[in-house]
Image (cartoon, rainbow, N blue to C red; front, top):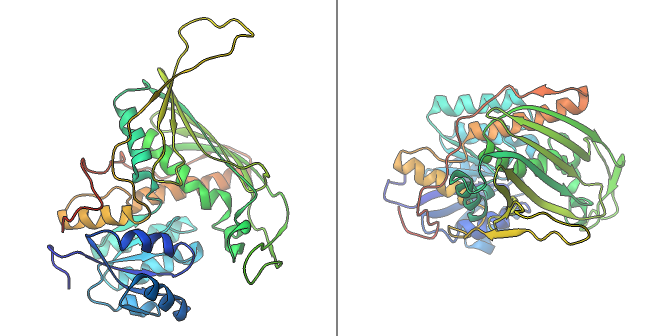
Amino acid sequence: MATASAPLGVGIIGAGNISDQYLTQLTSFPDVRVLAIGDLIEDRARDQAAKYGIARAGGIDTVLNDPDIEIVVNLTIPAVHVEVSEAIIAAGKHVWTEKPIGVNREESLGLLEKADAAGLRVGVAPDTVLGPGVQTAKRSIARGDIGRPLFAQTQFQWQGPELFHPNPAFLYAHGGGPLLDMGPYYVSTLVHVFGPVATVAALGLRGSETRRVQVGPLAGEEFPIEIPSTVSVLMQFEQGGQAQSLYSTDSPLLRHGVVEITGTEGTLVIPDPNTFGGAVTIIRPLTEAVTPPAPVVHKTVDVPQEGVLVGRGLGLLDMGRAIRAGRPHVATGRFGYHVLDTLLSIEDSVESGTFVPVQSTVDAVGSLPDGFDPLAVTL
């Protein structure tokens, strides 16, 4: 077993598309040792292990039964996130799970209760909100750079993941779609800024009933659309503030990464929440009258970005260091559950055509510790 002075022993379950992003980063962190990869398709796990120099690979039990693994990264499809995470908890290991934490409230709460009873932690993606982009923006708001935050606007629209994903059907099944797939990035960012969500309202539609795979061995195959592929959302936050969001995979026009927070003294433009960095800019109010047709010239202020730019796995690293230090980690299971509850409440609103209160809440969301350097040796 690892000691408090040794690097974190990490295992991965799920060797699909997103595993490359995690493995690229986790194998670069000095405080982490990736010890094993497991997948239902064992050859896929072995291929990834060979690619990244991981010692052990095979089925899921290869990871669960390894006594040196402290944290397991759950990269399975959303429909089995809770099932796999519960198996990890039962094996006595902490969980870092890809988003969402689950696809329904009851099972997801049950997972958190089992983790609490076992004295183990759950961390939930996205950890993009821990990158220098959103963290810099969050500090800017805390300093009062835009006064009191009033409202936000976010936007994600394009044709859909079938353009690049070799097996995209699960992204249009229950637990997927632009809302459950991309919504966690935007809702997580908004909760970091405004606090927990109180009420939502939404409209949804399906642009088509089926789609075709565009790439890979399944190219040309049709699959059904089980969820709304366009969702328009209004959100009210517990502590005040509002947000308006669009999530769509029905649009030939690509427009994504739009996150704008308007306060009493300016508008803060935040980087794409599906990335870890990017420019943070403040638009100041006009101070002189404008006479048409003279153009409006905004005064902009660039906010210097703070922190080390890395990628997926940052949240796991924070959780691991927090476990060793006995402090809270940022991307907690309770935070991930509130994001899921908000997204499911949006789905409920689409179905009912009414405003829907979000039943869960979450404490004030912390930030990474000052001077957090993922490339430093601390363990």
